[in-house]
Image (tube, rainbow, N blue to C red; front, top):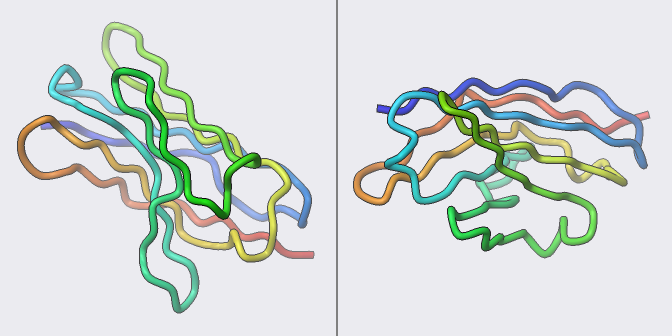
Length: 118
C-alpha cells in the first residue's frame, strides 16, 4: 500500500506560478512512476506530467516548457513536485497525484484545486 498526501494549489493570476507537492509513503519501492493528472471544468481527466524511476518524463503538449516535474526521495517517502509557471486560465483544474506501481492498480490522491483567474 502507498499513501499519498498532496499540498499546494490555490488561486493565482494568469502568468503566475504555483507548486504542487505529493508525498508518497508506504511501499514506495514498489513504484514505477509518479505523476499528476488534472480534471478541468467539463473536461476529461488528462495526464499533465509524469516521471519514471529511470528519470524519463512525459508532459502534456499544453504544459511543455511551462511545467516541470521532479521526484525526490528520502528514506521514508518519495515527493513528486510539479512546478507550474506562466499559468493560464485553461490550467484551472483539480490536480490529482498518481503513484503507479510496477504491478497492480495505481494509487490516487484526493486532488487539489488550482484556479487561474484575475
